[in-house]
Length: 314
Image (cartoon, rainbow, N blue to C red; front, side, top):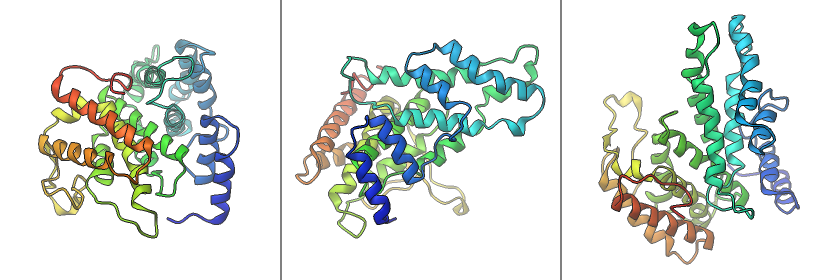
């Protein structure tokens, strides 16, 4: 979808400002209309205080869950906006670079683990003296829907580098919550790999081939870095049994195999990633993260029982 001149100017002004990247992501989210926390979110401020280290996990969960508990006990479920909680967590993940080490030396993958710890706390939360309602926490209501909505905020080829970073960050988050069993979003991996690796990108009205690779490859790398061992070992035929269901796991134009997770498809992704990493026209950043992802793929194949993190794969 082409962007208006007004939107283009707003994004340019944001990118060129002296604000930090997380603040720029906040501003861009509003301009682009991304799914994000409500302006008066009951959850987002507490989540940010927790991530900044101003409050600990117990304090954060007490602030987040107390009002939810009260509404559940009062049987006012319509007043519990679970989606805003999930958007608050997902947007927080967009603001955290998964692949770099901060100047302080803190591993951002560990910092992102604080985000996933909120999901674990929600899932495991118990309502005292009202155990019959615990399923409303353990089932993580509407999380899958919120993730699917956020996945629709994929950047266009003309996206700024900050938008590309945010897209890669949230895909790493999706990979990690899949790895940790909160939600199976592995189909997202196929969609990301299809865009990045299973189509030969061409210059067109939407953007150049290089721009497209620069947008798509970091997100693909995020899935490899976040879920590499599982993706390598995963064997599943996803060929639809009913044509009415579509074919969501189908390949791009270059993949001639089945709609599946398989060693063959993994090997194809690896071959394509190697090719793209050597293209002169893609950015140095794209080349670098491609090489990091290739190394992670090698490790997944060589040490299939070893867990991975962004720092061990970078």
